[in-house]
Image (cartoon, rainbow, N blue to C red; front, side, top):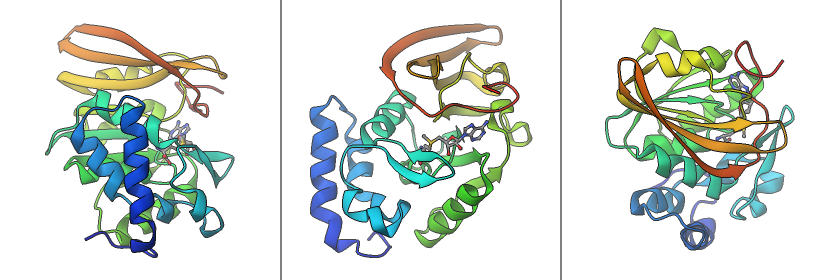
Length: 218
Ligand code: SAM
């Protein structure tokens, strides 16, 4: 049973959204189940809730967006989240992807640089019964207090792979980060194969808001 306002009203639209992202190539049934279950309309302003189940990014204030559901699903699928994984998310934004990660059974740590977004996401996630650890700050340096993490996902576009995030990965861990210019980025998957060895894979191109901070954009 999912909590939150107007949840029953939107259940058939959520199901359609899950079918839409499946048709666009998402194959992991658990990720599709998460899209079908987590109430995205709760994470947007009530004036936008009728658009919450379109497969598009929407404004959330502070010049930021809630990511397109397909993008959230693709990042989550590449991360191969398993129950009990310790996941660091950089860019909490609305908290929607945080909720998807929690739904999949991960222990989630998430950092957001804008305080109003951090506060709003904190309240919504609590209302829905999810229990991530949240912090307001610069995620380009990771969150060393809880490191290392099995999985790290960055939800904003980085100019280069932030080295602090790589150092906070366990051996066997996966980092998913969009890397490129401010107009378009290549989703990049880095797997830590040993203490000093890594594999890097370039995936599809996406367009994210910039990752701003000490190890990101100015
Ligand atoms: N998955 C989120 C969602 O669906 O709501 C994505 C939100 S948005 C695309 C990316 C977020 O990254 C924005 O809220 C932005 O403020 C945040 N961000 C950018 N640079 C950051 C940094 N250095 N540390 C933490 N958050 C950052």
